[in-house]
Image 1 (cartoon, rainbow, N blue to C red):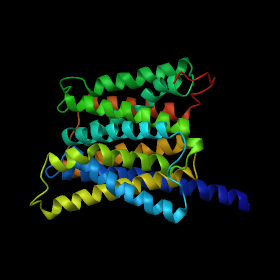
Image 2: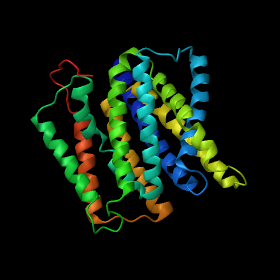
Image 3: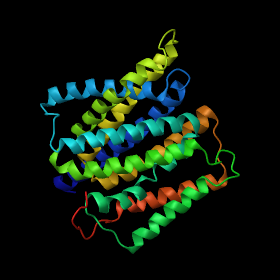
Image 4: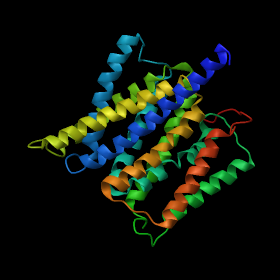
Length: 300
């Protein structure tokens, strides 16, 4: 094997390790959110993550000499707003649902992205892609089918679906401006908007007095895991194409399900597991196949 081939294999392996680490950190973030639920509300968690991430981005940008202003700033601010909605919806869903259900519904986002991208980026997709979209929707019906122990349709499921929709919109908008901005810039705007939007409800709605140490440890842990997950994902994208990173990131569902079973004794019915498998297969194939074949003029 020549040096070029060795370098190629090493890059792919490095990218795989960073993508898998990102999935693991996101899983640990989900566990930390669950442990923090008795002590903090969703606004406080989002505000803490935003402040922590904003300070980290300012430090990283200074060390790497990256300007965080970016271009197409209106789009970047919109990305920040939609992503904050995503995190708030997902956090609220994790509070109330088994980790598997919350996350498998989140990973319905490739289906929503395939529907949104023609409007935002002028992309188009073929008939086989509609089959994968229908497959994902069938999986969603099975996950939400009444009669399972944890699967009665509730507002928490709607929050998880809202998280999937807002995450799809976030990734589609990021794709629109990705070539013009450093990967750190969208996260900077997300943290900036999170600080602005969540400051008042975070500091006014629930008093932060006489909290036990375990609460503060949980809050610090979820901030740290969230930051590490995002940085690991950025690092993975330096070595692997984004579809491959996205597919590897689906390991978050597996890691979170195992942690939920081990730490919180969460059990799932057969319909939920079958539906989750259909959603994951649909999302995986939509992520890796060449969806966007014939670009047209964007509507937005």
